[in-house]
Length: 367
Ligand SMILES: *Cc1c(COP(=O)(O)O)cnc(C)c1O
Image (cartoon, rainbow, N blue to C red; front, side, top):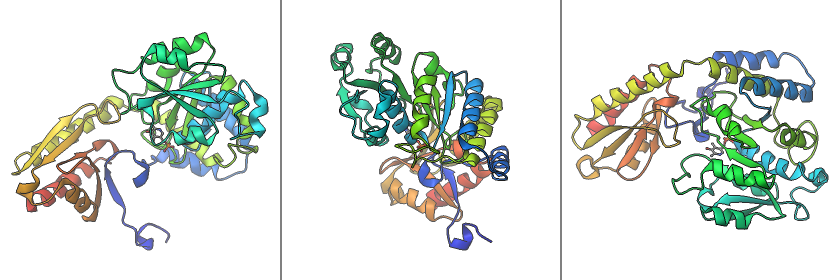
């Protein structure tokens, strides 16, 4: 039988986050079943992409939707769309688009490891300090779009998103919001676009629990239609970012499930898991565990910050993170620094919180 064990690979309990490094998230039965049905017959792929997009758009209160091969692919395709919508002839030129609108304005503080995808499409970042005058000064004839990255990179100093959108609208410049990890809350599926963002991007393989290599591009129909000619099954910049029929139906099933999900019960599960961790860990000498809310991505779910005294335990938090992975079963926790790590309940299957707690007692008491 083909499985992880037959390859000598140990499965991991995920108390870290929806990180790609450990497989993102687990697909629920309704997603697997939709993928398996899709795998049973051939279909016109472009037609399926359109119909799935229409259905997801309807469900998420957006004008249009497109299934991408991940949010990072969505970043690249949205950047390309902002050029194509003004210059359809640029389709043949990517990434050599200096003759067209090709600048993407961004808060300097929002630059992050995923934004390379903007440059892969050939756009050039114009970084601004967080002031309206800097934004206005950066806008010119070459401006294709404004990127906004939502998450840990945001700060109260940012130009408010609504204000950026209003200023961009004066010049007909699309604002693209990378909200890859901004679920929950489920309302974010329409919140950014209702505010006037031209496109909002989400990962399909994070909390949506769709197929790991999928993403959602939601928003303006003209922008989404502009990338169809250069995307799979057509040829051009988007052709290597292939999305299959299984992923399309799987992501649709994941969106349907997410909209039906009892998010309050799920948050309650996370609260109980964090309370369980705190109650078990706090009596241990040299260990302090506390509830932190919201979590790092800003999702409205609690997680547990564990602080240790490396002198008392005779090892660092990093050593403990490594020991969790070597533990049987292997557990991934979220590393922070030499004295702290997080236990994140959002990616645990019910029941695994007890396994994580027991591993903590084992590793931290023995230390
Ligand atoms: C996770 C993440 C991405 C990448 O998403 P994928 O679906 O893995 O491609 C992009 N941007 C941000 C801000 C993210 O958190």
